[in-house]
Length: 317
Image (cartoon, rainbow, N blue to C red; front, side, top):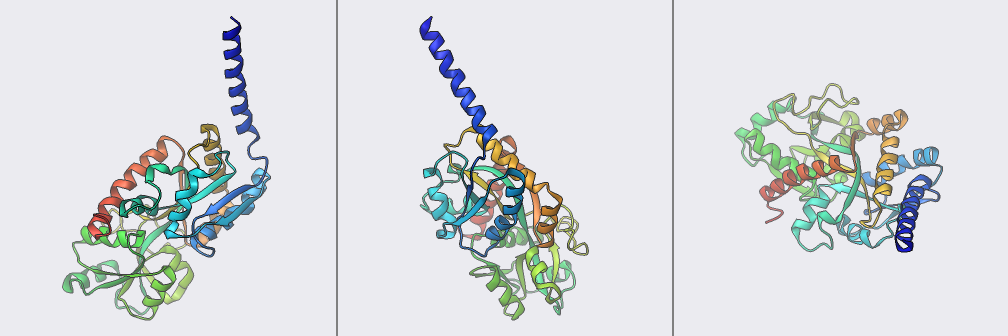
């Protein structure tokens, strides 16, 4: 009888502690680790989230960096961190799916506990403002008449840009040539310098370059509010909704209640109209994919899509 009472007391105590941890969290600053260097889009979006986190939850969101290996250095160390909710890390797709398929990078996709996807940078085909291509169909017609001679700049191999090129070539029945550059900035420079015919870039390129460029199509479900005159690929007959997705992950040892709390907190920031405006003005697109079955289904779908495209692109076996 005493033994049963003792067990019951332990269970009740553990439940109460778990409940209290979620209720009180966060009661100190949260370290938000970006697995890239400062200045990139992961950093920019984290900096946009900071003041809203402080305003809504009363604690600082401290951004730090752990760059290297295209994110792999940070992601490989995530599960060695304390699972108390005070260490969260930025994640990127397709990176956390494709990189482990390319070799030993210190982590597997299943090692990453993704709790919320808050936005993506939609893929877009971008040309110079004075380009002869006024529409996506103009570019497709040219590519069909000139197989492999239609060159696209893009940021890196096995990236969202590269996989979008592979996927679109297949859907449009064309053969184009992807020219990899180290970063979006270099890919834009190549476009503006007319070293390539077009760029597989993002809507952020349109936002940053303004009248210097023209976007022919964006890979979104609906037109981007900042670019109401630019059609989606879907409108033009190509079922493509894609880009570089960004979200938050926690160490695997993080309790379920804290995982859900982090997810709900980032979702609350995402729902703030002022935050949404800042993101949309910057050319980003918001997503709302929370922890649990929703995230599991999303990751399963994206994994199949990205791995097929990466194999077609020759970046994985």
